Image (spheres, one colour):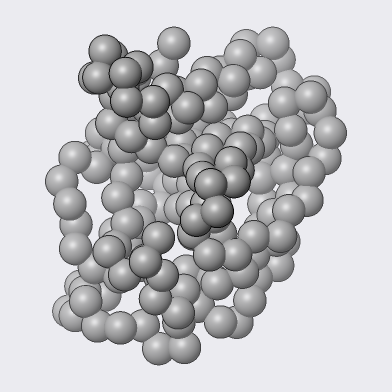
Length: 184
C-alpha cells in the first residue's frame, strides 16, 4: 500500500527527470505498482481511510512522485455529476489538444508540493490522450475541463515538469488570455 511516506517531495531529483517508457507488456511489478497508485487515490478520497493512514486527498498520481521514473499515471475523480473517472495508464501521450486554453481559478496543487503556490497554470481546454491500460488494451480518451487539466498535470510529471513551472512569475494571478477559468 502506498502512503504519504512513499510520495517524494519537491526538490527530489526524480521529479525533474524525464521518465522512461514502460516496456510492453509491463512486468507484474509494474502492473502492481500502477494498481497501488490507483488504490492510493481511491483511499485518499475516503475520509475514514485517509484519516487512519494520514493521507492527503489526491485525484492524480504519477510514478515519478513515488520515486519510480517510469511513464505511469493514475487518475481518480468524481465530476460535477458525481460520475467517477478512473484511469491507470502506461505510457500516456497527449496526441492532440485544443487551441483554447483553460485554468483552475483556485490554482493547482500537488501531492509532492507541501505548500500552496498561488497562480494560474495555463492548460489546454481539451486534449486527446492515448495510453495502455493495466489489462494491456490501448485506450484513447477525449477529455475536457478538470479531467483534461489533471491529465496534463500528471503527464507533466513524466516529463520532469512541475505545475508551478507554468505560472507567470511576474504576475501569477493575471487571467490567462483565450483561456476559460474553471472552478473545479
